[in-house]
Image 1 (spheres, rainbow, N blue to C red):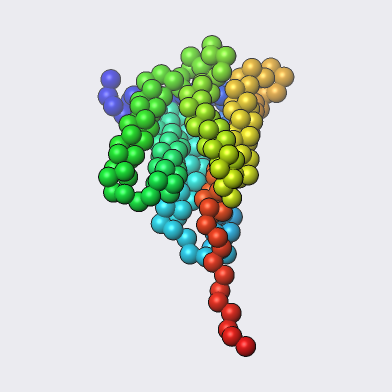
Image 2 (cartoon, one colour):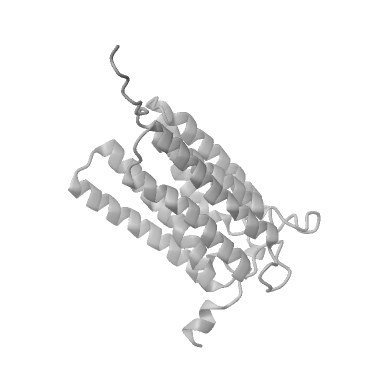
Length: 236
């Protein structure tokens, strides 16, 4: 089978999709607008607080890119668009964790290289598992509907929230809000197929909306990690 044929293999794992047409998942597709909207809002908030770091710029851009990738997946619904969906997500996860580690542990080049290798390895492993069968039609028989693949991210986020709260960091409330929001979004993703008979549109679109909010909270946590830069006032 040609590579292009493999990449065009259809993927149908959501309640809303009834056929292979482009607009078969209108709610799942259009709800991805939440990501670029959140990215724009956070960008404006960060700009108001002072100069934006390169890392925060990339993370905010990835937030918008997640929406685009997910839109492609919920319209084309095939293997290549599945990669367009998952790569920005796990890129954000890996880069955010790397940014958090390097912020807390200093800027040693050696430490950055080790952290980057470890995070890249975990991210590539997750992507490999997803590409080789985690998000297939077999999810219909999975009680978690494929949501189990995000369990490591939830655990990491809960640990991050607990550590931030324990250390009384200024970003702790935002990280906690992100963890609670992500837990709720995972519930909506899990019950999507189970509620098909009573709710034909499914609940997956709420996974997008809540995840956009969760990423917004995480980006705000990075913004709150440093004090706002106020313009100097002239002496009187």
